[in-house]
Length: 285
Image (cartoon, rainbow, N blue to C red):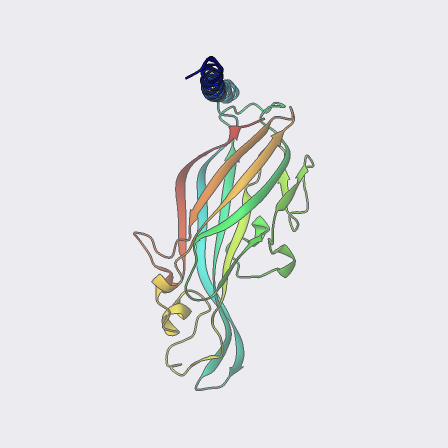
């Protein structure tokens, strides 16, 4: 091989070596960049986790500091359950029911552990929201209504008091207020009164056995052959309170519609029940 050919061969080898080196540099650079990105992502995730942890701890501490003492609570609820119907036609031997409905009146007593009334434990605004039927009856159509406390245990249905979404209460400091509309005294003097009504349990239903007197109460359910498990119902709703310091509170109330107790059944006519509860309003703002 002459000198000229040797030079050409050496030049080719150098070019090949340079290309190999360039490829290695590119690969190493790419690996370095990828590792750097991975480290950045890990650092970000660790920092984000730390921030979340700190925020959670701060929120817990903030919640705890706001709820060191109970300001508002519901310690008991009073229920009255019965039944009524509207007649479509009647005769000496039978009558036909247009709308058989079961109703339960509910009185929720908001109280404060501190009997002395201050800006902190008196009402500025109250509303009910987020009504949900945890267990809906298989017969009838359930709805919730506001009710005047003076009509408690009466079977009247006031269509204008139907709660379709959120129920806001008027807050009154007068000696006497109009309780036909949703109203609460600011000093917790009157309870929240609601009426659960399950309507159209039976429609166009004819009762032919009129040998015994027909009473418009829970005995109608038995006469119309309505099983209690077909009208069992449970619901929940949130109650929001703002006091006169503009502090905001909330609790979630859970209600099982009582159709029987240890002493009586709605089949006997009606059920009256006073139930101890522990619904604590927590301050969130």
